[in-house]
Length: 120
Image (cartoon, rainbow, N blue to C red; front, side, top):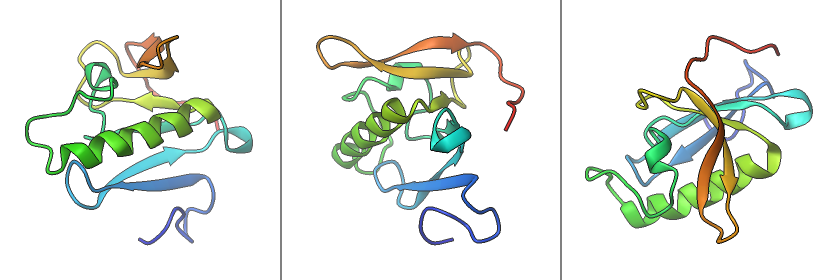
């Protein structure tokens, strides 16, 4: 797999890559209408809501400084396009929307405890 899209899946699924957690970590996004309002699998880049805040990383991230820059670009993109975040390691929140407060600090809103599918 190279680039943002697979020739098999087309534009419905977008891939991004991270080098900060582990080199080559792949993040998959299912597109919503008009490339907006989709959902992205955050994997270990942002495993749960406590890790949305930029300086927070896991102790075993391979390149934490790189990871912070990647999270910043990732969250800006998702916030701009209205893409929701799907978490794998958050016991209380399966999915939420990114937000920025008046100080520019990232957080989440519209938390969902469970996620079982979405219309495409």
